Image (cartoon, rainbow, N blue to C red):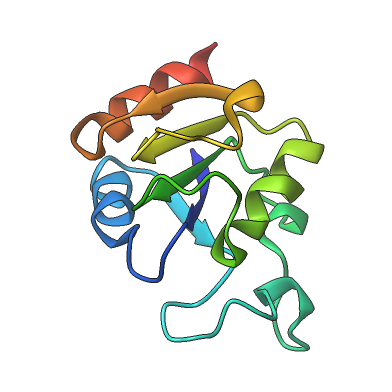
Length: 122
């Protein structure tokens, strides 16, 4: 399955991304690990938005390192995915989740692969 991964803070999703890949999933990101939060890869001349890929995105996972009451600039892909009706899994800290009304599931970092699999089967 193809999963779009975002994070509230740079580096917050490294472990989740690794777990998803080990679980057999294709992982895409809106921002390269060493790039600033703007622009996203979809605005870069030599890149393409994962949501515009020929491989459909089956779920979006945002890894929240802190209980922010609003989305962070690193999470801009969540909104893009939600507008396309891609199910959202929130991992890490889910307190003050600004996406609560659109969240399909909440996961711990340890069970994120299982939760994603369940959400994508639904």
